Length: 302
Ligand SMILES: Cc1cc2nc3c(=O)[nH]c(=O)nc-3n(C[C@H](O)[C@H](O)[C@H](O)COP(=O)(O)O)c2cc1C
Image 1 (cartoon, rainbow, N blue to C red):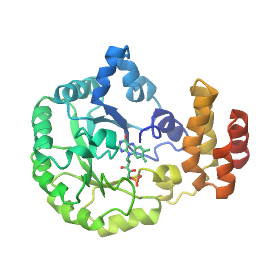
Image 2 (cartoon, rainbow, N blue to C red):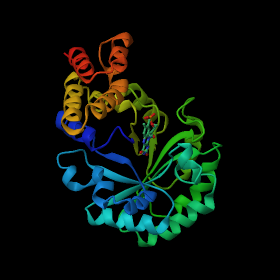
Image 3 (tube, rainbow, N blue to C red):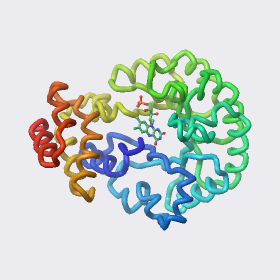
């Protein structure tokens, strides 16, 4: 997830809970970031999150690509392959309006011919395997049905479905009925994604959809960082993990303002895994000074 499950998070997570998450998908790398080369940005800085040297001791990761610019897609995919990535993921689920307006992310879902054109141009020349992460549509839940034959025409590694429309963003509930309808039509391994926060949520999906190949957890890993361990009946407190994450943020980010911003960004989600009240959690979010934020988090994770 952009800004959240970047390599800093993935490395601290793997240090605290080795092997608990078998695979992560990187926050998306936008193809139009190439434009930033002209502003003096290097390839290394654009790909920093997935550079193998930055990912030593981290959760194994599949780099994710966002966009529909086919030449850049092939070029970036093949650069990632040469770095050692055997699979890249195509994001056609992102709901941000600035992105969907340009037929990128979930903005491409109402246009099967554009999805077809991208896959036909990219697949024959792409060295790594390609998996897809998508929503069921941009405006309508039915858009996915026209896409299935196109996805089936290509040797994809997997298709991850978050059964909401892009317009829904994160509101409402995942449309399990549509997910159940489309599941048997897809010939690739299908991974379910959406609102998985507890072991019971995982069981519910696995029992209802027995042919689901796997489950991808998004925000749930922040609300409940030990969720993957709980599935194996380990009950570990998250305090230690949260402290390590905050330490890493303090050690890595350059200024007090950037440290506060990042610490609060994580805190606004991970506090839910602690035995504290919302009033206590909000005190951290209200604080403006670095030392106050730091001390409060320190106290609340004792
Ligand atoms: C802040 C934020 C950033 C996200 N960034 C990405 C991203 O870069 N790539 C992606 O595939 N999904 C991204 N997502 C979507 C999640 O991967 C996931 O599909 C979505 O949150 C639904 O699953 P969940 O209910 O388990 O969180 C993001 C979600 C959030 C809230």
